[in-house]
Image (cartoon, rainbow, N blue to C red; front, side, top):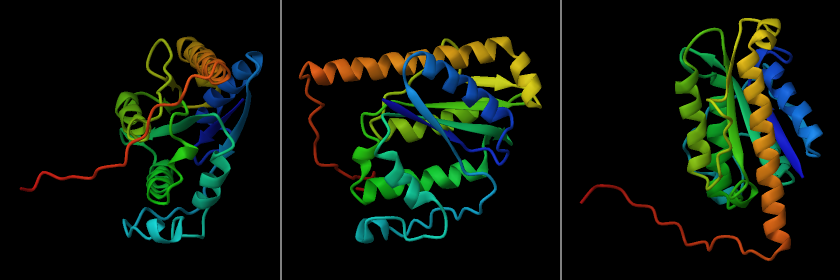
Amino acid sequence: MKVLLFNGSPHKNGCTYTALDEIAKTLKEEGIESEIYQIGIKSLTPCRACGACAKIGKCVISDDDVNNFVEYAKDFDGFIFGSPVHYGSACGGITAFMDRVFFSALLSGRMNYFRHKPGSAIVSARRSGTTAALDQLNKYFTISEMPIISGRYWNMVHGHTPDEVIQDEEGMQNMRILARNMAWHLKCLDAAKKAGVPMPKEEEIVFTNFIR
């Protein structure tokens, strides 16, 4: 079993990484493999809402890592997306990335790479805006039939530097609790699969609007 930890921060070893690293250490203690995926400062084009992914089977924008990530994701059993808080929301890089990842996966027929796999979001902030950023990120999971894994508090750490994040004892403890909850959920899914419990029945997706 493997969990992909996504670092949406432009800083490779910053505050968000510090939280994800604590999660990785705890997952290892629980016998779960993990890997940190870093987007860094690479240029990311936002979604064009062109719908071309439904025709060509992937995002039409090909000069960044979005298409590679979608294919890479199919080999993982769970996901944790981490972001710093910028202006009370998730940072621009991870927003553009996740918009295109989940939209193109849906329209290209590759949503099974994510569907029914547990997902979680964690955020880091100097001071505030954390709950708004978490609400934003969690919506990618709820629209994708992904169970959301929580800790015992909202999944956040505070600090202006990695050293300050480490001093946030409650936040770091919650990263460990989140990791253990993720490990437990994955082990339950594995046990259910071995016991022959079927996956939920799928229906053809219906799209409607409110115009009469």
